Image 1 (cartoon, rainbow, N blue to C red):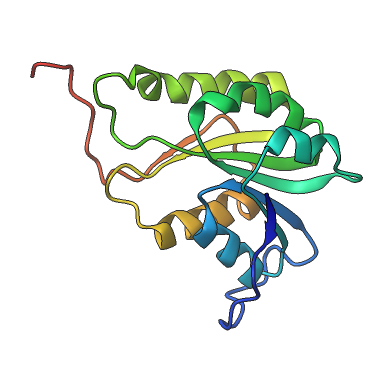
Image 2: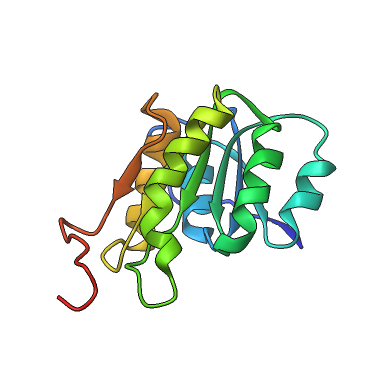
Length: 168
């Protein structure tokens, strides 16, 4: 299902995304709101993102993927073809791993590899852990989309908490 994000009543923080198009896939409602406040045209995709991008008539500036991890590898290549040069493919994932979620530990390495493969599109990861609020994630997402040329980076919001080997 394709939905648009309603215009928020907040005044723009700095209008850093003015004139840019941001697509948010999945659970990133607060990020979609913040991008709209920053001046972006926002499309919030909650249905089949591959189908959405196949039918997209023109490129977009940034894509935020806050959806089920298992669809992302195929999605990354499809999406990258629809992002303008220098745009951002930003994943939001990384609640601290539990048994059965070993893939979470490998996300930073995967993001680094995708950044090399999908350049000149910038590929980054926000890992909110249990500490990052939706507002914190949204603010960081806007910063990553606009204020940095970094690619292959993981932005860890776990407030310094490090992963420990199982059984420790």
